[in-house]
Image (cartoon, rainbow, N blue to C red; front, side):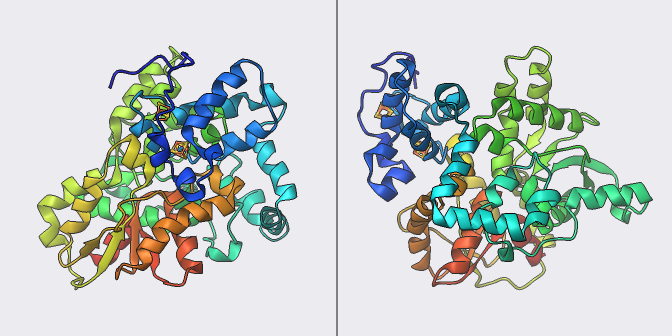
Length: 419
Ligand code: SF4
Ligand code: SF4
């Protein structure tokens, strides 16, 4: 597709194609949520017409990428949204994150969530999760009881073992891979990291080393418009993984997308451009990596009797729209003998998490989530599989409170259970 000049006020022809795919607009039917409306406002902002209401409008976007994928003019509305969020302090004197916390003051459910977090979960968000973790922001809207907290983060545990010289026998295994854990697997659901490690060891015969200085991928910082902070996190990760040149395996789809985007994020920095490109070339997406590994060895790897298990695979938007990785996870699941993979009758849909979107607009997030949840309720499958940390949290929360029941699992945890 030939991209038009986005600076041209007539670039958006108001055709409305993007409206037909925007999950927020589809859930609310409100024109204020349309991508084309944001394209229109961009020029109002450029003319200096800024209203405080704009912070709200530009916060109501999941950054899912569906509109960019569908726009016949190639207009990058998610990029525009991040740009406006980063400009908010200059435009209205209010940063995106300040907007989110002020919104909490007038929104009862957000306020009670934040209060409860402040009072009861101080140890979780106060000391336990590092400041730079995007998970801090995403967790603000979840009840602490929804999680069984590990005593220590996954990497923290490895650091302690390494300091005491108590590494497990796997640490003496030959290394052929490096592993980027992501915040969810590192801090909250370490079984994802453990399962991924186990699968890597079983299929390659080598361990996936974990560089101990790695940090949050920076997606939440970028979504909040904190571009400088996202760049610093990117540099820290690149540095951490330069201890060798092994392929870098990731277990979170959104982290994978963000790590890939370092080459654009640091593309304007001559000191980092090449390093970011080399880093991106080493990245391995979870399902693509294991599809290749499992294809040759599935008969020797599966032991449990799994026939008759019905599952549904949820496409994370970052893989579906931005990287077009939709076949590989399905092919990987279908390799498992006896598994029945079911699809939603209306096709794949956004789950409504969208990182900070769920924090700022829990009610809208739930509205978006209701559509795939209602469709899932009509399936006989009881298990939702995905490989994105945000989608996983969103489905776990939805299924825990929904009428159907069922459970959501990371692909790595599910497959490990079957081996
Ligand atoms: S699809 Fe593109 S050109 Fe059409 S209304 Fe949406 S942003 Fe404008
Ligand atoms: S990125 Fe997604 S949520 Fe945001 S405007 Fe586009 S389609 Fe709507």
